[in-house]
Length: 394
Ligand SMILES: Nc1nc2c(c(=O)[nH]1)N[C@H]1C(S)=C(S)[C@@H](COP(=O)(O)OP(=O)(O)OC[C@H]3O[C@@H](n4cnc5c(N)ncnc54)[C@H](O)[C@@H]3O)O[C@H]1N2
Ligand code: MOO
Image 1 (cartoon, helix red, strand yellow):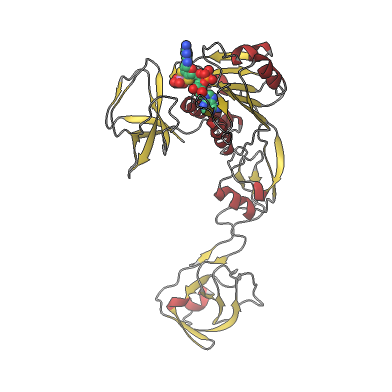
Image 2: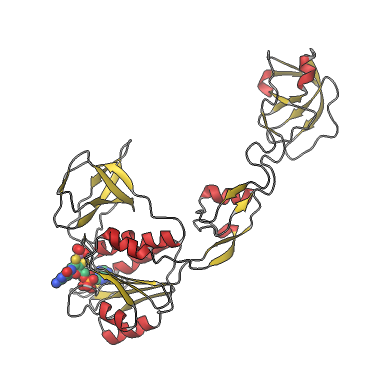
C-alpha cells in the first residue's frame, strides 16, 4: 500500500493545464492568471500630493519667503495653469498632481491662511515632503504579475489599476461527479428507515465550489454494473471524474472493476491512511484523472482535501496547498498503524489546535466547525500537548 505522500506524488506528477481563456476582470476573483502583466506607466503616474495643504517651491523658502500668495487651487484630477511665480503657492488636495515648479507640500494643519495669503508654522521644509514621486512605486514596463498568480482581492485591484480589463486565466477543469449506492436517496426525497440521504453530493459540490468548479455532470447511480458502466463511459473525455462509494471490499463495490474495464489505468487502490483507506485513483485515456473516493462522509472529505485539492492546486500552477504547523492542545493516541487525519479547531493568539470529537468516519457531523484537518503520522504513537502538528486548512 502506498502512503498518502507517495499517492500525492503519483497524482501531482500527472498534473496538467486545463486550457486558458480570456475573461473580464469582473469575474476574476480566485481565478489563476495564465499571463504576465507589466506596468503600463509609472506609478504613481505623476508627483502626487499625499496631504491636503500648500505646494511651494522650496527655493522661495530658502530665500527667506515666509508669506505666500495662493496662485491656484488644484483638486485631484486637475492640472496647473502656469508654473509658480516667486513667493506663490498652490493650494493642493490629496491625490492631486504636484506641478513641476513645486517641490514640497506643507500640511493644511501647519498653515495659517488669510484670504489668499498663507504662512506656515514650521521651522524646516524638506524637499519633496508630502509628495509621492512619479514612479517611486513602480516604473513603466516593470514586470508586476507573473502567470500562476491567484487573483486575490489585492491582485484584482492591481489588475484594475493597470487597466487590464480582460485577462487570460487558466480554464477550470470539466468535472463529472457521481455518487453511488442503492441505499442513498436525494436529500429532498421521502426516506425509508434503511436509507440515508445523499450528503456527499452536497459535500463534494461545496468543496469544488471553493475552486469555482461546478460539475458538468452531477448524478447519483445505483450499485449496478451496467448503469455505472454506461454513466462512466459518457465522461471518459472529461478532465476529472470524481465518484464516491463502492470502492472497498463489498459485493456491490463495482467501481474499480468498471473503471478498469473502461480503460481507466489504475494508479493505486487503497492507501495506508485513516480515514480514506479504500480510495481508488486512475488515469483516463485522455490523461485526466479519476478519483473514486470512499463513501463514508468523513473519508470522502479527507480524501478530497488530501488528493483532489493537491491535484487542482498543482494543475493551476499554485504548488501544493500550504501546510501549517500549530501547537497541539490535547492528547491523541493513534488507533491504527496508518497515517491518521482528524478534525481540529484553531483558536487563540498565538493559535493552537484542539481536536474536535468525531466518532467514526461515518459520523455525519464531519468534525463540525473544524478549521483544519490535522495529521497524526504513522511513526508517532501519541500526540502530546505542545507537539507541533501539521494541518491543512479546511
Ligand atoms: N471488508 C472491508 N470492508 C470495508 C473496508 C475494508 O477495507 N474491508 N473499508 C472500510 C472503509 S475504511 C470505508 S471508508 C468504507 C468505504 O466503502 P465504499 O467506498 O465502498 O463506500 P460504500 O460502502 O458505498 O459506503 C460507505 C458508507 O458511506 C455511506 N455513503 C455512501 N455514499 C454516500 C453518500 N453519497 N452520502 C452519504 N453517505 C454515503 C454508505 O451508506 C455507507 O454507510 O468501506 C469499509 N468497509
Ligand atoms: O477509513 Mo474508512 O475511510 O474509515 O471509513
